[in-house]
Every structure is written in structure tokens, then in C-alpha cells.
Image (cartoon, rainbow, N blue to C red):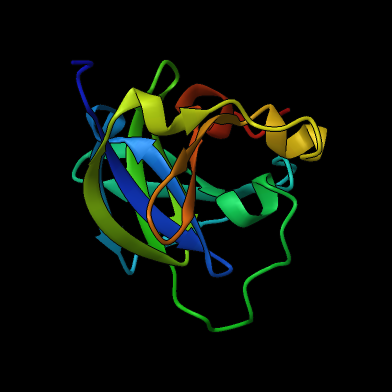
Length: 143
């Protein structure tokens, strides 16, 4: 039997996305971010996490979604990338679940290319679809 993949789910505009748990370092609420001039549009700025500097990326903007309403809270999923720590701003964090590889499919060609390049696979669960993101591509705001 194939081994299950453990994923951390989160919400963006009511849709469920996920990252592999092995790539998630922590979840942080109320993160103070310092804006950086001339940064790519998806970069919110820099954050200080227990002695380390992390880039904060707006995952909504990265996925070409509408901006979060002014004052609407966000949660940050902190991941370790090749470039260092990255905080991905999401609307809310869901559950950690195990999915079997046989419930995962490739992203369809009908997805916008800007989104399809970030999606590793789509998990078909009983009551919803979960888009599993490619962490390395999701944290790269220059694409």
C-alpha cells in the first residue's frame, strides 16, 4: 500500500490549499511585517522571527486572487525554502491530514498558467478538493 502524504491545509478566499507538513516550520498569527521598497508585488515585506529575518509573501497575490480586505486578519504559514525562511500569508489554517497518493491528480490544463505552475497536485477528498502547492514555486515571488 502506498504511503500517505501528510499535508497542512489552509484557506484562501474560501478555497482549500495545502503544503506538505514536512516543509512547514510553524504557523504564526499577528506577524509584524516591515515593507520593503521596490519589492515584487507579492512581497509584503520582511518579518523578524526569533532572531531570523523572513520574507513575507501574500499568497493571495501570488495566486492572482483578490486582495484581502483592509484590516482583515491573516495567518502566516512559515516554510523553510532554499533562500531561507518565508512567511506565506493565508486567510486561515485548517487541519493536518493524511492523503494517499491515489487520491491526487495532476492539475488540469484549464487552470490559469500562473496558478497551475504553483500546484503540485489536486487531492480529491470526500467533500472538497484540495490544491497541494509546490512550496519552492509558491515562495518565489519573482515568477
